Image (cartoon, rainbow, N blue to C red):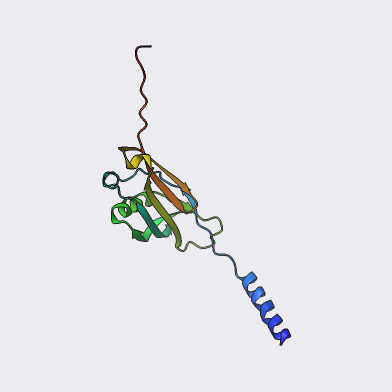
Length: 147
């Protein structure tokens, strides 16, 4: 019985090591974005998850968004999709020009100070498969002209 279990484990190990890893799609260029103005005024926060199908550009090794599936807050979703359509992707280990997929989550949120005052400053950062879009309170700096 132990010999059969050992043989099965050995076989599964050989099969899994013989299966090549799926090609990795990477972001070549992403576009920073501002908080959507209407969502900012309405104080809408939330996440938008997008699975994009990427199509290779003709005569190029780069990929662009072709179609997508998205879930999340409707007021934020359109802004996220518009932003993602401006991104460029590449795939170093792709051997065929077939379509690829890429998943990303946009997170829209306000700083604590922004919840009690006007939100003017906006920023976005991208890391791996996540975009953080933040609205912050405007820092007012005053100078004393009598000095």
